[in-house]
Image (cartoon, rainbow, N blue to C red; front, side, top):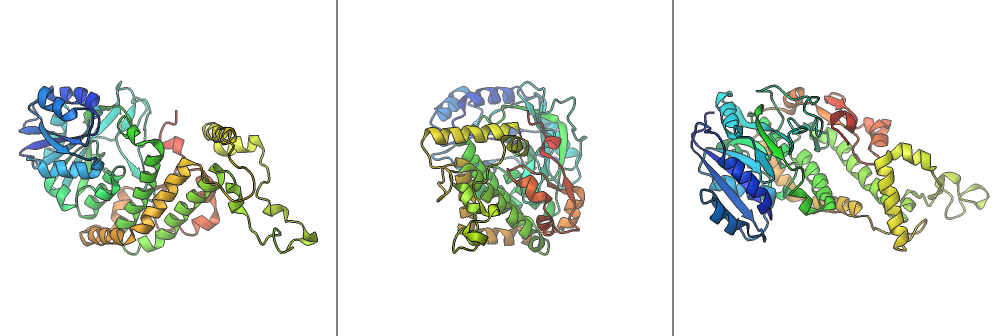
Length: 435
């Protein structure tokens, strides 16, 4: 598709300092070869963004919302307002290179007609480490960025024209007709994994996504998303991953992989409840294993039933790793200073990460009908089966949450994985830098 006109769409929520850099870099773009416009949605900001844009960048077309619509609904609104037949989505906390837009336009114009979107490359602010060049999806709808935070000289960067399962929502050029035809970003997501979901829907509809390494933007990683708070992001990750899997796995495969997806969600929730909350270890208690009704020999509780059996510090260090071990130790210290309950008895829910996880589960349960409607819509436009898609982009099995390694290695869990499903098994540190 050779675009006739391009609209650059930027969403901003209390991000005026970021816009000052981003819009200046856009103003310095070299001619992309087609007419283009800049749109900024002031997404319920309270930092004077709208007045500043009008004054400092009169060429920019300003769209306003009195409330924060979120990344998905906000960008959908920008796409609807766009005059171009192709829309370039760009994060406000980025600095695009001078040839950024020209590279995206050239890549989409040179691609076969079935290519709906082109994804550019994202690097850190200094241009030394990789942020995004490609993405992979796990079997349960989560996504990872191979090479994330690795030095560019050591990161695996796809060749120009390589196929991707999805384009990054912070640096992509997409046909407006394809974007709207696929339903745009799912506004129920608010933010995160909306680009994964869109990419899957595009491929299932017979369209493709490709990569160009020449469309480079520098990114202040998480500069805007940090405003949401760490644990609120955890809610979005878990909820949106489940919805992505639920909506998009084709009939026949979804029913077979659903037990593994559900077991993973339950296991993660259980692990967080048990390990991060005072008294949480009592959830492992089997009350009929000698703790009530005198069911143990000699009238004493069975040793295996003890909910407080100590685990050595070295064993915990090895099981969690230094970073997670230190985080848990700090959490225990905070609870002790606050006088929180410990040991046996009823669990006391104090951990914000656990609360976020439970909120994700609660959301899914309260919105099953809405999710089912969206699943029906996604499946109705399907033209390509998942077998063909996953032959190109195999799903990943990567322990990322506490307890994942034990769960994924258990025969009971493995019994629920479809044996004919292509899976790549990796450790997290094999995919991205954890420094």
